[in-house]
Amino acid sequence: MPKIKDLRGNLSVIESCSDIPFEIKRTYLIYDVPGGQIRGGHAYRNQLEFIVSLSGSFDVHLDDGVNKEVFSMNRSYYGLLVSNMIWRSMQNFSTNALCLVLSSTFFDKNDYMKDYESFLEEVKAL
Ligand code: TYD
Image 1 (cartoon, rainbow, N blue to C red):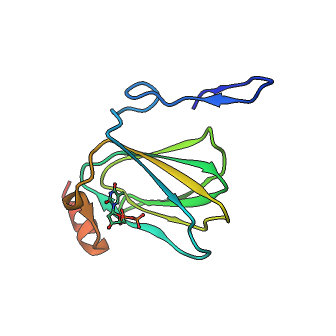
Image 2: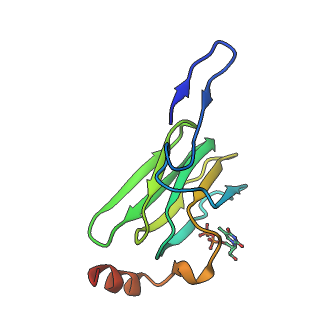
């Protein structure tokens, strides 16, 4: 994200369809995560999301069915764009971690893929 430095404090901005490649339909927060807990553990068929650590830190594990990568989120001006059809989980939350997720879709429980083996099959068929 752009970081506008200022002696009064820094400012970062996320604008729909320019800083991120989708219109923001929904935002949600993940917070008060007890030590050792894992959030996510699924993929979305259609949803794109942009994940930001507003405070504290956590790791985002991404898996496209072939490659796996871990991103450490610990800067409030750093966002991670996650495409649809990517298996993702969030782990290793620090005390007081505050995770912001910007989503390209309204909530739709039918967009979730929660079974990893089915995800692998669907991703291979793409
Ligand atoms: P879920 O996406 O499964 O959380 P995580 O993947 O981080 O573990 O959502 C947990 C619960 O919250 C589930 O019952 C659905 C509900 N929920 C909503 O109602 N609206 C939302 O926008 C989201 C993200 C979740």
